[in-house]
Image (tube, helix red, strand yellow):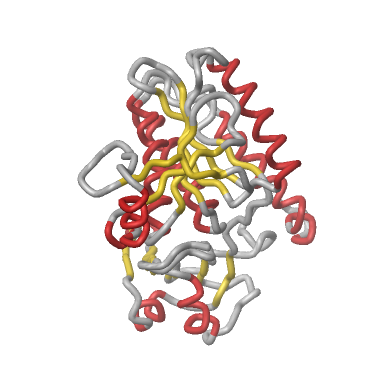
Length: 307
């Protein structure tokens, strides 16, 4: 992002009426203050207002997107609950078991994940999300094949071999189970191709929560944990025209009341890094541009596997 005014500043440089020295406003204290404000905003009751609910969902989806694009996940998983093992309509019971499972998975197997809850039409809870390669993924014996919604079992070893040879380029994806999940049934697909599309697919489940009763399921838009990278942010001394000259796809908008013009260039940050760091990193209060390194870190190029 680049603006025609210095709106992106290092912590401690923001214009404020606070008379304390800048040093007291920067560093950890500033970060803690910002984090507390963000947490308070997330915890604030949204009420029945649909617009507020939609805004909260968009904020949550943006956070999930940032996490997913800043990490290299390998699997897209769907976790359902066996009614013989857990009451899948009891949010508190499901949440307690899920948290215990995830905590053990992180400590014992180095898992990293982002999971989004969803309700079946009958109100039963299940989860979709992205997981790193933390083990326990085994072939289910079924495949997703073109023109068929549900996974299909090959009729012979020869057919299975033919599907494997055709592979994702032809629309054949082997379906795995995640045997680490103890509370029901699971499916897992290895991410392939457009990583960002997979991320957007997960984010859509957050937006779906706004159409159900009560919005957030169990008070949570999503679950995340493990050693996760966050977006990296660099402050650069650049102006909107420099983004426009870069040849990137630029989205521009303005806020006339503030005399503000902003350009946004989206894409893989590694492709942009050399172009924009040539302009010089600015740690001065007047730094005008911001480059986020939240692109698909380790994401596969189309036609390749994310390994």
